[in-house]
Amino acid sequence: MEARSVHSFPQLLSRVRVLDFTRVLAGPYLTRCLAALGAEVIKVERPVSGDDARGFAYHTQGESGYFLQQNHDKKSIALDLKHPKGAAIARELCARADVVVENFRPGVMTRLGLDYATLSARHPRLIMCSISTFGQTGPYAQKGGQGMLADALSGAMDITGFPDRPPPVFRLPVADILTGVHGLGAICAALYAREQTGRGAYIDLSLLDCMFALQEFAVQSYFLSQGTVKATREGYTFPETVPYGLFSARDGAVVLAAGLDANWARLAQAMGRPELAQDPRFATSPQRIHHRREVESLVQEWIGQQTVKEVTATLDAHGVPCAPVKTVEEAIHDPQIQARHMLVTMTHPLLRAVTFPNLPFKIDGAVPTPSALAPRIGQHNAEVLSHLLG
Image 1 (cartoon, rainbow, N blue to C red):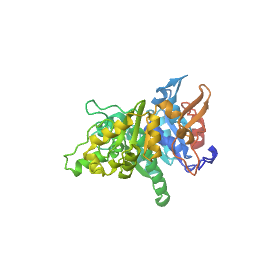
Image 2: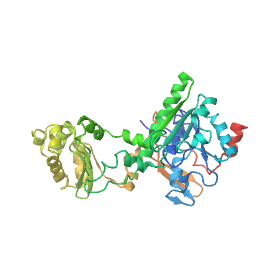
Image 3: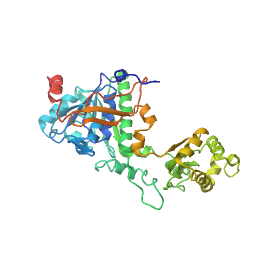
Image 4: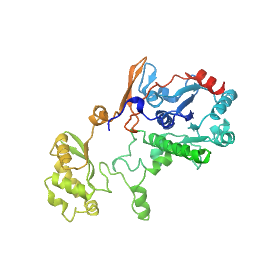
């Protein structure tokens, strides 16, 4: 289906007002999604310095690309929440909001009189989402943190990388974006439920919980084996399904996913070795897992004799899932990325133009397209305060 014009993107949340107390990434990504779906998002920032992300790299002409990407189509008001008057204004704004999203350390909103119990007593239809590294309860609740701590504590970092090296730091903000996506789903569900019940909801969302929820094979195998099977770092391959992983061609790297029996048979055909699909050592997934090193050696020997283009062409022709490993620059120019409208460019008064990855959801063939640049600190104070508070 062809994407329709930018104006046809469904504004499904056009009657929803969001008060956004978040900063950096998990919360701003969540509220960016809400804004793309039509919600009015009012970003509450500290006077003068604003969201910490305004100073993040890549930084040029006084603008942060990081901040611009996650905060377009929002309004900004500057409030000093530590001042009684600022906190009082925030409470009045919350009373006129449908959704409040915050990512302060647990307890801060209570000290400010902005906790869910206080706000919902006056406004029972309010939906509030609190985002933190460790959640509102538990022994780590008061511990400060960011996404990397969730990566480490969830076990995800320990099972990534090579067995003879320390685990790597993730180059992508998986915990933050994953938390934002879970928050989006929970808020939309709460909005739907409110139509039936007339009541709001409180959502407690933790980066650590979201990362631990990613665990599948590692946790399942631990419990099903009574703790005898423990996931380890396996480098370029995936031990629970074979062959599945990264292999080296003459001029680069290729990933392939041929763990299913049908895909293994197709791969054997592509390799010119159809008999491998019937070999009793390799015929089924459990047998291939048992003879994993032999399978991976056969596949690597075949791939290593070819270029990336040659091997992917052969695998594609035989219906074997595969892809070349591309650089970020190559991904930017990839025809599939382009066809899916995954880059968006906005005109900027200082930078002339700013380009960043688009949000990934398409609805009824339409693509989310930003219409307003990320705001200046307090840019909408007069508009928001006069309109909502008189």
